[in-house]
Image 1 (tube, rainbow, N blue to C red):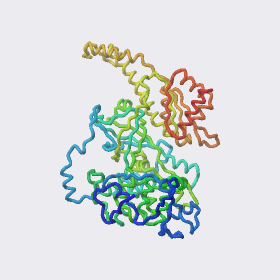
Image 2 (image 1 turned 90 degrees about the horizontal axis):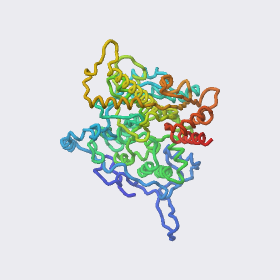
Image 3 (image 1 turned 120 degrees about the vertical axis):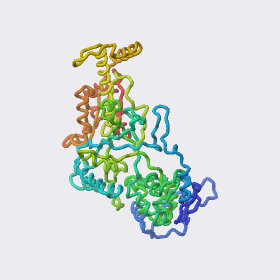
Image 4 (image 1 turned 30 degrees about the horizontal axis):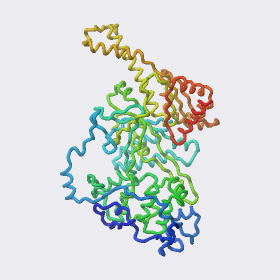
Length: 606
């Protein structure tokens, strides 16, 4: 890897990718070739590596403890062949002065800010052109105490900055929902909070969805992470948050915007990114430790324990390997980090049902679990056992506080950026007579609430057709009659209506069985009232539940119910083999999905 370190006080003009991944000023290792071409290259340490560890780095100290190294031991070197390849996340980054900025702004056309057109609905919202949606409502689906949300609502009424409000509200939630002190069951429930959120859609129907679709949400980095990087850049390189830059030749934005909304500061680091950071380490031992963590052979177990298990982000790495801060420039940082990925959530509503409600606003609903947990405590790692929160879900919980509090009166909802993510496979069958088996433990129930709401709306539509036919025949309706001539229908219209009514009369609705599982029946039984209503009205034929943490009872998961209960085994066999039912599974694809699939195989094989 070749390149030069960008001067600390400036950000370089557009440069090749290699410049974003600059080599360190000192050579840490060098390779020597054996006389035999078949012999592997060996690593030889440069004399700059001290014989005894002298690094004061917290990261180096933790890595050495995890490796059980003595003070005289050196962190193992790794062969370049075991290190990941490096590809910069950007092609150019340049500071823009006032004169250049004015020239670019004059050249911007109105079309630059328009949404991309599509052939069907006229507009299409995407990751790059999202829709600014207003939060219309939110509620806890878990039996979560909303007292904290009430206090957090008061924070958002204060005159402090938006970032300060988020930080204060988050700390409030942390204190109200302890995860490590008190009753173990209570702590577990504190970390299990599920929210349903209602989001506005364009009134012109330019953002459409169907049950089974997902919606992508774009959220910024946390204020703490953003401010940490901005402070580092200003202290070490003189880069001000208000300075304008152009990344990859895009429209100029401030450094604060680039750091806060474009690069991912809050996800666990990947090996490739760690290796890129190692190129900026001025401390030789820090460079060795980062290279070891990045390697694909010697560093696998260490990477798992130090980075993945502890959810260490670039903020954590820069703090624990501080010599990287001295050399990494704005361009180097942007080149090391990927873009903030959108968060996708299943839609739990039906557009057909929403239109029938005639609420006056076009909207959709999503459900998500608030990510809030403790990392494992490790004796060798003083920074282990930390509380980690999801970037998106903790942010959404904070800004939704006024709704979670069930506050009365008008609430001016905050906005979030969204875009649709349609699916082609996870759809209701076109034939309503097809039986359905829905398996959705936890928040996997979300899309099935949309399915059931849609099916209910479809049945309501069928009943409306029949009512329309009765009315068109002149049947008495509360004191008035409809004469066929008053309908002002042409012969063709009448024929079309009759054909539609004939089709509707022949429609039948298939049976629907649903399997739901959670930990506690008294805490995270999501949509309990709605599921009971669907069952009582006949939308749901059968509702089977499993609870894995009920006091004094054996752990029970949906796959256990499917295999162990004779009624369920018989029902699954009948629905799948005799009635050709469609089976839908939503939830943890890595564990639950495979177990459910195996359970179905076992049931059908018996």
